[in-house]
Structures are given as C-alpha cells and as structure tokens.
Length: 242
Ligand SMILES: [Zn+2]
Image (cartoon, rainbow, N blue to C red; front, side, top):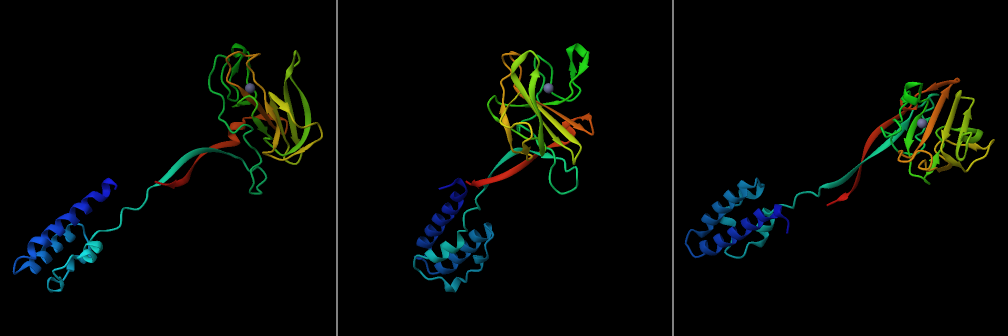
C-alpha cells in the first residue's frame, strides 16, 4: 500500500463507521448521505451527488468503490545520456563527422589538455587536433567515410603507437586518428562510425595521462577544430515506470 492511498483507506473506514451508527437512528439515511457528500466533495468526486433516499441500510461497497479513485498514475523512470552529433557538410541530411570514441574531449592533466590549439611544449607549439578520451582496448570508429590513405607510427622512435588516416576526396576531408591499433589497411574503404581499430594505452609513453585518441581533421588541407564539427547533446530515455 503506497503512502498516497492512505487517505482513501481512512475515508473508507470513516464511511463504514458512519453507516453503522446512522443505521440505528431514524434519520440515518440522510445523515449518511450528507456525510458521504461532504467526504466525497473533499476529494472532488462527482459521486458527491448521492441521493439520500437512494441509500439502503446495507454495506454500500459499490458506493465506496466509486468514491475511492484510482491510484495516481505511474511515474516514468528516465535516464539522461550524452550523444555526439556530427556536422552535415554536404547537406544530405546525414552526419559527415563522428566522435571516434564516444567520449568527451580530454580535460587538463599533467601533460596539458586535449582541445584544439591547446599549448604544447611550454607554448612553443599548438595542439593540432582534439583528444577524445578513450579506454585502452576499446573500439575506435571512423570519424569520416572514405578510404584508408595511410597507416603509420605516431612517433618515429616508437613502434607501438600507431595511427590511421582516412581521406574523403568528395568532401575534401582528411582525418588522422592517432593511438589506434589498426584493423584496416591502406586502400580499404571505411564508412563513418565503423570500427577502424582498438585504442592504445598511452601509459608507457606518458605515465598518468588521460588515455585518448588524437583526432586531426583537415578540410581542403587546412587543420580545423573537430569540436566545431561534433556537437554534444543530451537525450532522455524513458526506461520504465515505478
Ligand atoms: Zn592530441
């Protein structure tokens, strides 16, 4: 029994008590009808217009049942989640850019932060991509459709950290994704959002850094801020009712 239903149970008990006492008096029917009308009116029910003469000295379960309203409607249970929406660059109604990990850009850590043009090497240069937080081993998805134009090493002195580059000549876009163990080869055609590899751990090279993939997008050969092309939106799902 929910808390919300208790007042109705109390009303039911009071009505039953009134009926028992009023049945023993000459004017019992009228007294009961008034009591019912007052009680029903207090909870705003049309049945308050009960006819005094119509009441019979029996247990009026049917009247009580009509006086007690249905319990309040079930409350929906919802959950909010973040989705990433890529820009539609060619106007076909479909996104042309995707978040490769599904996670937010890397915030400040001991090595800097992951936004476009963030300071690097003590201000000597700027970060030319956007770092998207990743869990090592997770699937990395193609940020654009196109063909694999390069697979290589992120650093000349490190044979473990690799990158995948995708070219889309129709859109004049190039996307390079660093710190990916490739599952594609040069020449492969890839569709936006499809797996291209697994995220590397960066802990051996940058101990304590927030693991991420580094995404560089070039439009017509010019580096652009991926965050201007990938927007964050919150959607609400209805899971069930409690
Ligand atoms: Zn980076």
